[in-house]
Image (cartoon, rainbow, N blue to C red):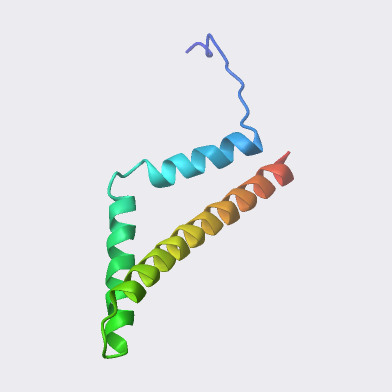
Length: 93
């Protein structure tokens, strides 16, 4: 059996890997963003009914804050994964 006829050596920079992780997380499945919006909506409804009085203003504010919180948590998780993988690659070289 013959060896490979073409050998391609590639590398991915830290910034390219970060972009890849964001694209893979948010664009791989088209339902990610709607599910996050729905989850924050449900959480906001639970928070507002906990007080016994439903306020539309606090509902909208808590919905936006919960959505921002979920996006920030996902971004932190992506950054942590990126740094972990980058350190692993760095130590292998």
